[in-house]
Length: 258
Image 1 (cartoon, rainbow, N blue to C red):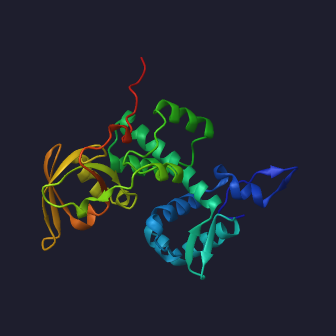
Image 2: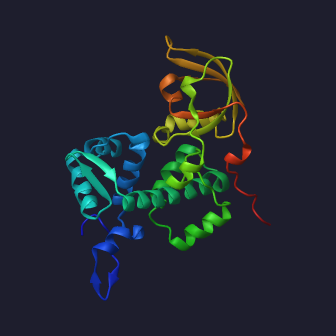
Image 3: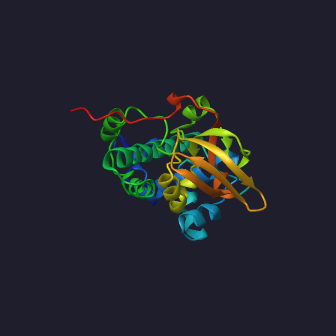
């Protein structure tokens, strides 16, 4: 089937079940679409093929054709002819793709030393190429992270266990908080990622809100590297925990063994 890589076989015959559930047989393009749908559909948002197409920089026709294939494979369902929803199998596949992406980001940032924006781009190139064996070894080496470096839960089960946090944009002047996670939507903005990393506004960082102005559409805070200013829109893509947060919520890659 076009759009899907070599399928598994049982007794020499390709089966629909094999194609549907073996995430390692998904083409890189199919993985990209599933991951994009997972990101855009956060917080229950309704998503169409056209929206995913804009997100990926492809035509609506190309996006619609890919989603027809993913619907046929049982990974996506389509409500009212437009709204796209990950099925249970599709969510599991998207979570598995995101997990590989997150592990690669940890490797590239904490071990190789790349910046956030660059590591996200490189991880996208590599995520479809690593084997389950390498993935398991990476997970062990990196200390079994439950989030990506930006603090986003690797899968739905992890998300249910962790606190939701509050939007940085809703914090009032004088409040103290801890940066909790940079949402997946924010991860799509390399400029924002680079700014946050340069100001050390990363998960676990303590901040104090100095000013919040709706008229100026901005928020000023004091962080680990002094003052930083964000528009309220970018600040709405950052979740914080009021006050001092539990350090165990923030993953740290173990030091390399000699």
